[in-house]
Length: 159
Image (cartoon, rainbow, N blue to C red):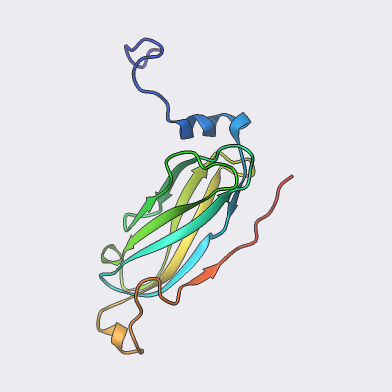
């Protein structure tokens, strides 16, 4: 079966992250420093930025292959290159409340990495969207990320 007319070595090349994810000899370990974020109350119209920190706790380069939001109201950004052993990185989510609804929310980002313990991790953030009028009823309005609570879930080591 032939996929295209290019000769071997010509045309598109496989990104390093995808190649690393497919080769278990290049797998490393990751320590997620943030996996669940509570952004508190946001006013409808706000765009909140949420950061999930991680560290390459292994001995080989770490690659984030993808970071896919669970819905269209969130845009995820992540390092596209190799993260050296011992170095920290960040997966960032931009949550647009204009694309959500007033009320409580819980959103996710599905991350794929070249890691031994599991190549798949789900990051979560939650909070509440209030209408512009509601924000002033219960006291002073909070800015996005203000009063944010960070919850770090225990990580299981698999030997």
